[in-house]
Image 1 (cartoon, rainbow, N blue to C red):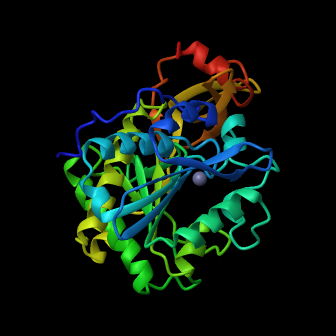
Image 2: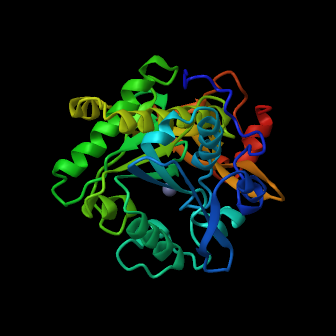
Length: 358
Ligand SMILES: [Zn+2]
């Protein structure tokens, strides 16, 4: 079966706002239980499947507003229902939403405003303890730590649609056997996606060691851990294209594990580093009046994601004014032929968009 087809899409999940109330109606189709409750009392669900000997633990939405990898998990579950071969070799334990409070309020943090990805040692938060308990009890051979990254990340001049990382286990960022296995897994995903349309939009995430980060902590405990960051694909702010690439990444990674066929670690090191080089908008050559003088500069705007009802709205806010020749815009209008703006651009991002009819 060709995993690159996108017919495995859980149509009940779409857009950026995904919380327990979206996934709960789907769970009865799977072997799911509640493994605990969040700080604000919402259930945390876990799905188990497969009868194989090699165990993979996956968790998503540790950061509540990072939902793309959760959509892809349910796409993967559809795929695994139609092709059960992987499940003869693998056993999966999946926590689709680790931070249901953050998911509900569409924030990175949990109900106590704590970043769960800085709580791996202290385990102050109940969500951290639930994940750690699952890790200890399930005793995985591999772990997948699943996130979204902001639209600011790029690979060379293109958006970073996917970023991969084999997290460090020590300050010196050495490669031991465990980290090498994680890197080979990342390399397998990277290599597998070279025939896709995001071949040049896959980055390697920053590997600075932080023992409070869950990926680093699990890697230190000897379990190869792969970080997958879902990112921006051109004109896809709701990340419906990206979810398909993430789904493909899951299938490639699970196939590599199931068949023990991994790409070489040198391929991991060849993945270009992702960099913070994008704004959502970069307006080129904007003329504006400042204290009576006409000036020209580039203007960067960045979307703020705002939950309104059941939808995420994208509100552009001012990000930078000046020479932005080193920065790219996902949208880049040239404004040199426009009349000079008389309003203060720093205070009027919406005005600027309105003037340009955007
Ligand atoms: Zn995250």
